[in-house]
Image 1 (cartoon, rainbow, N blue to C red):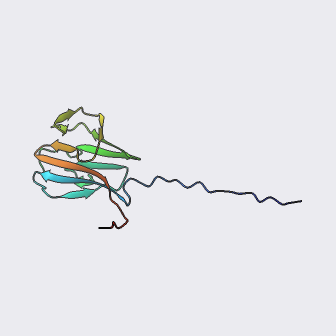
Image 2 (cartoon, helix red, strand yellow):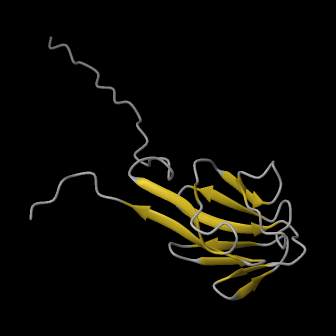
Image 3 (tube, helix red, strand yellow):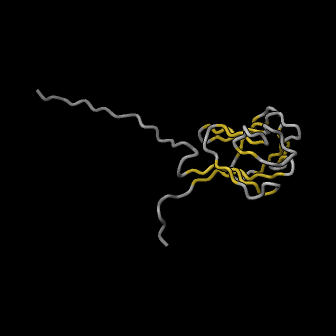
Length: 130
């Protein structure tokens, strides 16, 4: 009698965290008092505002203490206005308070005197041949 071996395979998730290498998620200030500031997104929710509680604290006085959240769910990114006093624009369109809108690479977010660039990119880790 031939003995059969039982094969087992481990379930390994193939999806990496969207904010781990080789992915880069970030907010970059391209206009306003905090010009050139960059915040790398490294968690599921990132709060932006003037408060010390904000993950990305900005100094623009026209921004609310807790202005908006960036939410990361797999490869989906959304902006959620937290009921800010002066509102939020996404690519020139008003974001309704307490409403989530989808974000994509190079979207522009405006609030107060500040304009942010949302960066959601993947970089190559293997060298390329010239």
